[in-house]
Amino acid sequence: MQTALRPSRLARELPPNGIREFFDLVQTRSEVISLGVGEPDFATPWRICDAAIEGMRRGQTSYTSNYGTLELREAIAEDLERRYAVSYDPGTEILVTAGVSEAMDLAMRALLDTGEEVIVPEPCYVSYRPCVDMTGGRSVGLETRMEDRFILLPEALEAALTPATRAFTLCYPNNPTGAVMTRQELLPLAELAEKHDLVVISDEIYAHLRYIGQHTCFASLPGMRERTILLNGFSKAYAMTGWRLGYACGPAEIIEAMMRIHSYTALCASSMAQTGALEALRHGEQDMQEMVAQYDQRRRLLLQGYRELGLPCFDPGGAFYTFPSIAHTGLTSAQFAKALLFEENVAAVPGTAFGPCGEGHIRATYATHMDLLKEALERLGRFLEKLQAGQIKLEA
Amino acid sequence: MRELLRILETEGPVDSQELAVRLGQSVAEVEAALADLREQGVLLRYSALVNWEKVEEEKVYAFINVSATPEHGCGFDKVAEYLSQFAEVHSLYLMSGQADLCVVVEGRDFRDIARFVAEKLAPTPGVRSTSTSFVLKTYKMEGEKLFGEAKNGRLAVSP
Image (tube, rainbow over the protein chains, first blue to last red):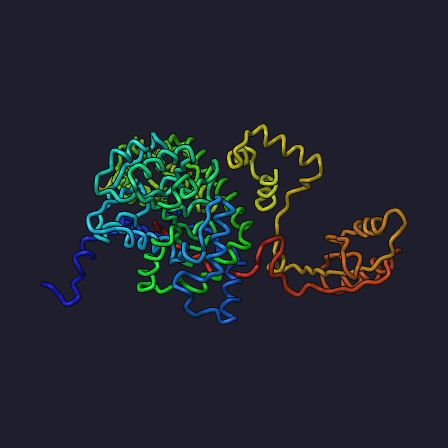
């Protein structure tokens, strides 16, 4: 029977977040070591909290410009100029949002008309495809593979293009794989974007968490500033996930369109969070570098652990994820993750949460304390031994 | 090198196998670096950080600002090195500002420290005056906060 509050078709047809079910399962257990978390284990550096608190004391708690405070937009512009030599006008080309999640939603809504396609390389963050599909556009998943280090190959992209293709997404360093792409590898993608007049929505939230090579900002490639919507934020690099603060940069026309939607749905990003973010950009570099150094040590430790356990994993050059293959165990990702949780109380996310091509993998984060990582590796070793000895009863 | 020292400073001894993995170096490289650091007096020793306020045993610390008379050719080194010999002196610094030296003294109780100041520290040749401040409560030492903090409320699984 239909009730007055029956959800819309759009809401009903939205696929459930692939992580939700697993999250509920983990909640039923205690003493779990979680490698399933997509956020830093560090607290926000105190100088940033302090700046936000001081801002509140001074009464900086009102609405800001729809675009975000000019001060913060200027600091963002300076930061991008300094790091990647890419210039944005803080007045018209930067929009401060409630995290990259909101910015992604705005980008798709501002960009797409019904039926237009966006190619989404997978495995990828859970929100990209729903954000496209909610606009009436059509998301097209495109598989990337471990044997290619999970980079997007130009020939694969070109083969996926149709007359309806309007844009493609990029996320390097990547969640969930930790993959990175070099400038040389990105250049052919830029050429394709030019050739086929495509927009590139580049989520660079993990740009600072880079351990091999230097990050290339996609908008800094020749001709790309004019066709890229650059998304970034403060969550990962400055351990500010709960602050919900991100930003979008691009040519004024598209940023103004995004701002118009944002002005009706969010009005502005949290003013307190904006005060904190300004401090992060002005004085947060050292805190960030120290966290990055810690992640890098843990990354090496986890990878060495996998090698010793015979778990194939490519060397992730960024973010804070590993994406080892568990295909050789004969289990599906979901079976493996559930059994690992039930047998050894270690939570890792099934690769399929990030797209069908994540099958055969699990995502394990090293945004976890070193001691817990060591313990998790021991448990994982025990689990693999039990699995090999046929001592594990699998759920159907 | 800096990264290695940082690990040892915060975590204490870590076996060279693990250090090699975490730093992306060979075991031989790490062991050679450790040997060098010990030889050069950079790496002094490993010790635990103890919160004595939680232990029954009485332990009191005082920060003592000392004004001293400098000597030709060696400044405050001689008097500082002399004072450093006392087991009661926990640490000792040459300071900028009003006092010349800051002497951190450790004792069983207040009287213990008072006796040390009156009978040993103040009469030492070269010491002109002392000003003693007792530690009443420790909130943070060596980078470690000693008060309980709210637990990190991270979700167990998130995208």
